[in-house]
Length: 420
Image (cartoon, rainbow, N blue to C red; front, side):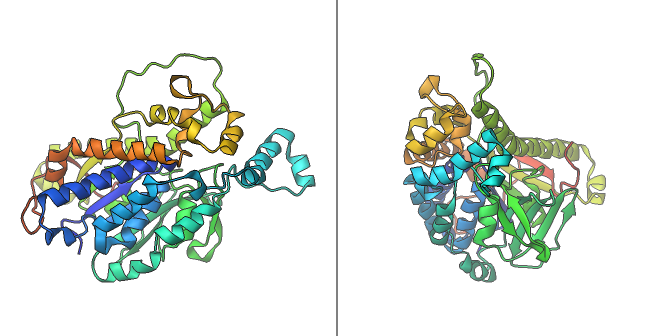
C-alpha cells in the first residue's frame, strides 16, 4: 500500500542530469530505514508518480515496482551508477556517422542534396539502445498488478506533440480519473508503454520523435519538457495532497557566478541555453506560482477559502545545490570519442575551467563518473535537509507514518490559472 495522505513524486527532465534524482531517492530510502520500523517501510511513500523526459523513465521504473520501493530505488541506482552512453544512444563511429553526420550535412549542404539522396536523418543521435534498456529496467506489464493491489494510485508521463502542438499527459490510475484539458494541455488515460517513455525522453533535435496514437489518431511526439507550462499540475489533478518535487538545476544553485565574455556565442552555448529554458525554467516558474497562490490563499478568511475550488497542497522542492554545468565541465572528456568529435563542431570541448559547451554536454553525459557525482550530490543535498524531509513525510520510528502540521509551501490544488 502507499502512504497517506496521498503524496506525489514529481521528476523533471534533463537527460543525464536526472542522475541527481536517483541520489535524492537513495537518501529517502536511507532516512526511512533509519527512523522507521521494517513493517512501516512496506508502504510506497508515493501514491502518485509523475515524470517528464528522463524523469519519466525513473518514474515508470519506480511505479512498476511500487510494491517494493526500496529495492526499486537500488535497482535504478545500479543502472545510473554504472551508466555508459552506449546504453542510451549509438556512440560508435558508424552509429554517429549514420545519424549525426547526415543530419549536420543536411543542415550545412542543404535540402536539395538531402532530397536527391533521399536522406531523411531524424536526429543527431540514434537512441535505439535506450529502447533495449527500457525492456530490462521498466517492466510496465507489472503496472496493472501494483495498481490493482493498491501499491500505487496513478502514474503520469508527459510528452509534446510535434503534429498538433499540444502538451499531453498520459496517465493510468487505479480509480477512474476524469481527464482534464487546459489551453494547449491535454490529459489522456491509457496503457502506458515503452513508446510513451521514448517519446517523453526524445530531447529535441538530439533524439528521434516517437509516433503515438492518442485517441486513435497517429501523431509524432517529442520531449515532455517542451511546452510544459505547468509541470506539477498532473500530480494535483490525480489527487495528490502534497508534492515532493526534484529539480535538475538552477533552482537552488549558488548565486554570484561570473561568466567572462569570450566573443560571439557558439552553437553549443546557444543550444545549452535553449535546453535550460526547456528543461529547467518551467519547473521553477511553476513552483514560484504555486508559492504565490499559497500566499494569496493564506490571506483569505476561512469562509472564503471554503467557497473556492482550490485546495491547499504541501510541497517540498529538492534541487541541486551546485551548478551541474560546472560538474559537467569536468567530465566532457568522458563522452565517447565519436560523440565528442560530432559536438566539437558545435563548440563543445576543453575541460574544467576552460570547457566550452558544458551545458549542452550535461544532457548527453550518460557516463558513470558524471552520473555518480550527481547521485552523490543528490544524496548529500537531501541528507542536509534531513529534518525538513522527515517532517514533510511525517516519518518516525512508529509503525505507521504520522500526519503533521504543514509548515512548507502550500499551493492551489487545481492550478487552473495559466502561466503568462
